[in-house]
Image (tube, rainbow, N blue to C red):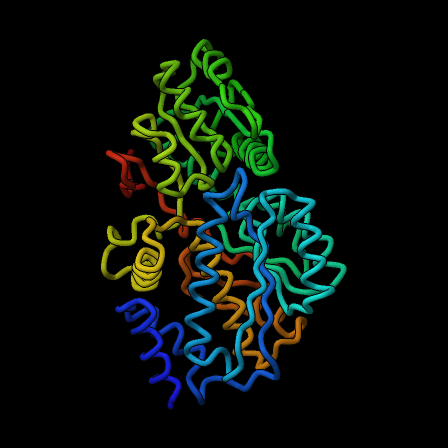
Length: 400
């Protein structure tokens, strides 16, 4: 049976209806004539935080990888060879992530590793990756994962520095330039705080007060009360991911700080809204366009890909889409397209082809990698959103 007919039959049974853009993406990976035969199955190792404090980031990543590897294999894999996914849960523990990465490379002989739900778990895996010379596509946000550039390390999410820049630009537009930062003491919280502090002077932002919270903190009212007492503040920025920012948001409303509140792209999930409850109303954040796919103009080049992924994820899981599952989708497709172009699953050739990615339309934006840029996204890939009545609203960046 021709590849396109195999894919159509598999897709019909798979979701009942798969958006045209998804068909186009996967057909491009399996259609004869466009693919040089791979020499063996593509063995992909994955380490995500499907349980633990980062579960609401890692669980959609896990589900996405499983859904799309199944679909690709039903359509003939890559060049007629299967994709083998070896997926592990690190529970959010960096040492477990490091050990699992080492096992995938030494025992399972994977050609590439996708994962690192958090900055901490990603950074724990990096030395293992570099020593083994196997390409790694991180799903975490900190710029320090890829800056300075590491030969074997790439990432799909927007960086923490990009998030600071997007937030600060909106603060300047709204003339809210004297702020407090409340940051988590985890690796991502510290990294984003540092990026914001470095960037603030150049953008005309004054950071007049700072507070921190720990990953296990369940009561942060004292920190928010201190923010409320500080005179002259115009807004508050929270640097964190996982459940912590929701706890901060609830305390923020409980204490009655009464200032505009910004979160990072580390909360880009409906689960954050559920955890924060009514306190999330009015919160602004930078996030991938995936969260507002249906609200984008029809001419937006990302819209077909975003709607296809969102429809598929909802149909297969019964859950709302999150930016974090999108990061996993982007990582998988970058790897699969690299294998297609290389006609090989040899790690060095995969690495080179990932770095040669040009104009790839993913859920996070249009990706163009280079030897000096292993994220491949510019600031236009982040959209400014506000939470209203339990949903995401796209904010115009021409005004306030």
